[in-house]
Image 1 (tube, rainbow, N blue to C red):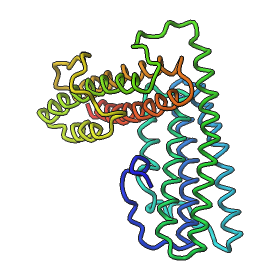
Image 2: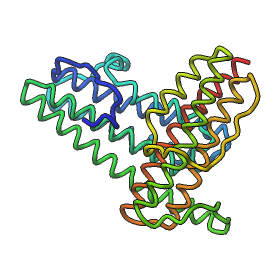
Image 3: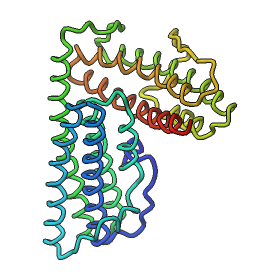
Length: 307
């Protein structure tokens, strides 16, 4: 299990078949519930394409729920009622959907990108359960479920690529923002290091400002995100980021999004011409950036509601 997939140890010491069935059912039910809610949110925001993307994922997830029920019945196990095993799920598997729902940058491509990441986290959880299982039968079933999550991720990747192509065609006539020529992995690393240095500098300053005005929760969020960059930051970036003179937490959190948005735009420029491994690396960096943006956007929305 890679730390990049699950941020903390689930601390499940004893893995029985009953527990495995409960967790599998909870994962699929949770995903279906999130997709349905996010489709409604995107519809209300007038983002029909993104709402449609979530409805497609919802339909797929409903099939997964049914598949788990049939699998459990074949093992002679009963699927527990909704909510009975939710406490066993790592927070990573639900928090990502809370975070992206507040993102103004959410598109069908990015929705599928986050879905891919979540399927990979589920795979990591099943790998963990397989390693902790002492019963060979339970271990084999956990490994089977993990492989199935990888299959789900492959489907989401295909939809993600198709969404990317559609979005690129829709914006073909729109000039892309200027960015450094990136034609190699080394050039991409240089680009990421430069932008991450700007992001780190801005977030440290903004976290200090947030603490000064008594918003420790927002400051903690920015400081936590400093530990999860898309690439280690360079010493200095040469890029600028404006820090507003304000005591409004919401405005400070909006300012925290701006250097991340700049990196997001630069990565999309790279992906418009990249292929193969370079495209995959840029895409992975973009998922990282969008996830951080979404977490800050969600916190900013809460700060605005608290005014």
